[in-house]
Length: 322
Image (cartoon, rainbow, N blue to C red):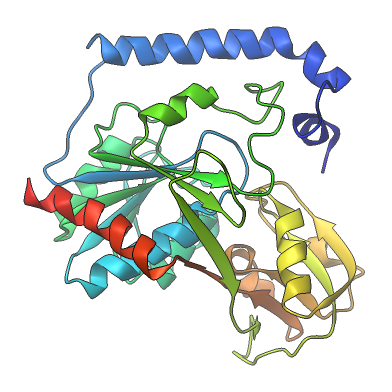
């Protein structure tokens, strides 16, 4: 964790104090933009099917991708056809692009590629979520659109907002970027339809989500790996959570090499590591082209209590009745 991120999760850190003027400017620009949408000066665009936003108010991993996968599975089980749109962060995308399981992460982004491989749903990426949604509806037959990480993309009209909250890190020092980890003030949560805490309790959350690790599998040979000594390699928003998950799965962490979120891996990033290497599934999709036979990934799956599952899906399916 770099110095800036350290300051976000400590109270009254000197760097956060220094950055407060920039945080005030950030608030002024972002809140002003929202006012323009509220007044109708900037236009919201509505799609022909319901839109569910899955997002957060903080930077870093909060569990949006596992939740989106879980949500797609639940909807498919009920005979509902979801489609996914995403920004495609980390890739240079100028127009809507359909993601397939064979796409390159460098071309479409790591999270969209993982969603395309695991969700069994169509996925379209574009920084302009409205354009992505229109392309999705033009190419595929879907009943509902799930927008991954689109809470602050206000051009896209939405029917339901789901906000994920890190149950361990919470909201950090509670300050806006760059003085803190927040994209929007905590007061923004009152406008969301559903608040979900990931891997820990948060007082304001409506539901608790758990992430459960699955079988650790080779990137090359589809072979499992029993608990042993490993070196962790990750380019995600919250690598500390990954380390804890690996330890809870029985692995002994003897080394680690952490990079920035959405890091575009190359073979040289693994120099000096003899293995076994353990990485996240999101990172694995970027490393398969040059993977070695002792590189493995640790999948995780979201889960809820039976009652909470029924409540969440019921709220979403009601959108289709309007």
